[in-house]
Image 1 (cartoon, rainbow, N blue to C red):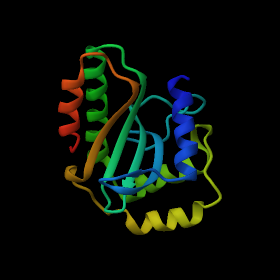
Image 2: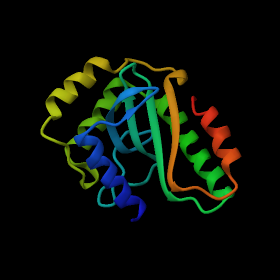
Image 3: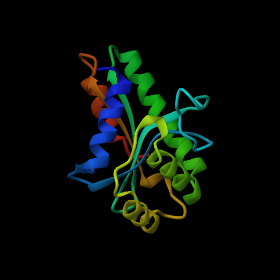
Image 4: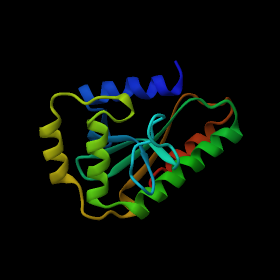
Length: 168
C-alpha cells in the first residue's frame, strides 16, 4: 500500500468513525491535504503547488492535531526531514489560520476534494464544527504528529524526543 492509498483508507475510516486518542478524547476530521497559505486542497488534477499537511483533526477542547503521514521512513535523515516538514506545516497553519479559511478547507474536503467523499452526516458535523472552532488560535493549541508504518531502526531516541516536543 502506498502513501496515497493509506491516506485514502484513513480518510474513509475516520469519516465513518472519528478517531479517539486517550489523552484527547474524540477527534473530528477537519480536512486532508490542506495547502498553506491558500488553504486550498492539494490534488493532482487541480492544484498542488504549495506545501500541504496530510490531515487536520480537532479535539473537543479545540486543540488541533496536524498529521503528516509517511509509509516507510527508511533512515534517520529522512526521519529528521519528515519532522521538519510537519513542523513547517504547523507553523504555516498557525500563521495563516482563520475560521473562514478552515471552514473553506473543510467544505472542499467534504465535497470530495482529492477524490475522497464525506458521509451523509455532513450537515450535523459542519454545524458542530462551526460551533467549536475558535476565531483565533495560539501555537499552544497545536500538536504535530508524524505517523508512519515503519520508522528506521535505531531511531527510537529521535522519535521519543519529537513526541515529547509534539506540542508546538
